[in-house]
Image (tube, rainbow, N blue to C red; front, top):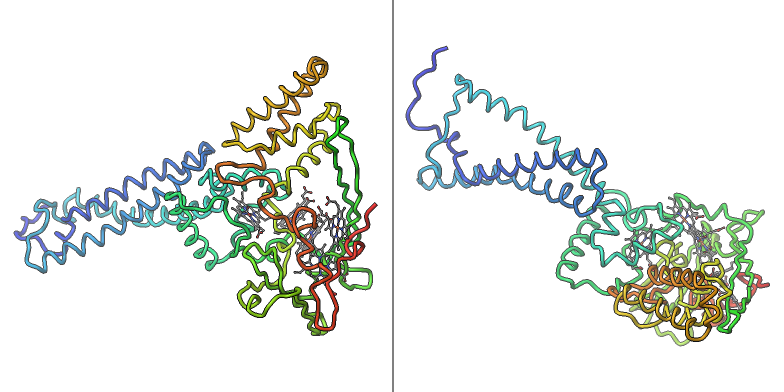
Length: 464
Ligand code: HEC
Ligand code: HEC
Ligand code: HEC
Ligand code: HEC
Ligand code: HEC
């Protein structure tokens, strides 16, 4: 076919593309699309295991892609403004858009095909990006040092298969925006190293617990008691054991359908609200109970003033007011940790004074976990070599096993770089190391007419 002779003077709309910003945009878009495909296929074949690569492929590259796409209209607009000001096109040489020419036709056709493909890429990338940001790897490993204590402890907890986001972030668009905003703030804090050490607890914008927990647990179906055995060991040569058996009145609902026992607080029939006087919710100044028949009962801590209550945090009681460490559970104290370790057979009880020596080893002040591991080993080996050479000679393997178990205990509970140490985070179940149940059950939180929240030892359990 005959091509008509080219006309002189390019039409305006065409030459708007002759702009460096537009060209840069097109290049960025194309390159990042290619890179994204590489990443996507690498991921499909299961080759991407590193969370940092995830950031690159599913966040950085798609972001570049979108920036590229945005640059194109921005460049067009800049160029148009330039022309309005009577300036010549930024770039003089540009092929004419003449569909009679094969090459031009190919380009136009390519653009028409590529646009839907580009949109697909954005869709796929953002889906992958969101999915990736919801993964445990993203939450636990990307800001490695910051989340390490929770990430490590999480893997040993009963909920190691429940994703971080399932408890921390609710479903729906509002949670998405909220979490991404606070996430962005956190990233900045990590980059500037201005984040708190340790990360404070409680978390004030946690997803409402009943929404989370009741997907799997239904307290109305709980019944009966739960028996727990607490083993303790003395600091003597024989590491003497003593056992307390506690029969906890878990409750839920009784045969007549009435709420009772420990889960009475979260029964549908009852609503409990409280006011905490401190940020850690360890000091409770006021408790308000509304029962099924609408009867309201108000308890106040002794001596608390109206001004204190007005300044406190008011909160409806739910699962995490007791189960505040359902996941990433740290030992409540070094003593409890070592008792549990001995009880579980992690350290041979035949080693003389192993409880006392082990406890002192894991509670030393160390600058890093590696320093602690070296010191724990040196202390135990040194002790048996010096004090019990016959034990060292005959039971060296047991000593080494004890060293490994103690290192492991330390590794899960103490993180010097984040200033997380024994007993830092309160655990509200029970009442031994932390006030826990006794934040309210004081025998002193009282109504005006003298009814109190009771501390009778058999209200919650039988002890054998
Ligand atoms: C089963 C629910 C659940 C899961 C799963 C979970 N968390 Fe938590 N997390 C909580 C609760 C509840 C708190 C708040 C404790 C409080 O309010 O006293 C919390 C608190 C935190 C805190 C504040 C500091 C602290 O230790 O209290 C961090 C950080 C944290 N979680 C990180 C994570 C990370 C990272 C993961 C995944 C590896 C994760 N969480 C998984 C329930 C959960
Ligand atoms: C996705 C399901 C799921 C969700 C959501 C979930 N749990 Fe669990 N939870 C489990 C399973 C499964 C176990 C039993 C684990 C085991 O026996 O090792 C368990 C165990 C427990 C236990 C007993 C732990 C122990 O050491 O014996 C408590 C307490 C508990 N969950 C509380 C909670 C609370 C509080 C929440 C909400 C913050 C919650 N769970 C959310 C599945 C879930
Ligand atoms: C008043 C404090 C309190 C509240 C509120 C509470 N729990 Fe518990 N729960 C306990 C105690 C104490 C235990 C027994 C110790 C343990 O297993 O951790 C327990 C045990 C459990 C268990 C283990 C049961 C078993 O038989 O092993 C699950 C699961 C559980 N709670 C889930 C929940 C859920 C879900 C909620 C919220 C709807 C909730 N709890 C609210 C105190 C509470
Ligand atoms: C925020 C305050 C608060 C906390 C914390 C709290 N309780 Fe209670 N609890 C109450 C109130 C209020 C009552 C009702 C008192 C009354 O009716 O006289 C109650 C009643 C009970 C009852 C009697 C239920 C029945 O069958 O009638 C048990 C059992 C109980 N609590 C166990 C616990 C345990 C175990 C913990 C800790 C894991 C705990 N509570 C923590 C406020 C609290
Ligand atoms: C409001 C409920 C409540 C009351 C009242 C209560 N306890 Fe407990 N107690 C608990 C819970 C819950 C646990 C289990 C903690 C756990 O699972 O680790 C516990 C555990 C114990 C243990 C086991 C040891 C340990 O290391 O945790 C002892 C001992 C104990 N209580 C003694 C008492 C005595 C003595 C009283 C009376 C002054 C009392 N309790 C009153 C809720 C209560």
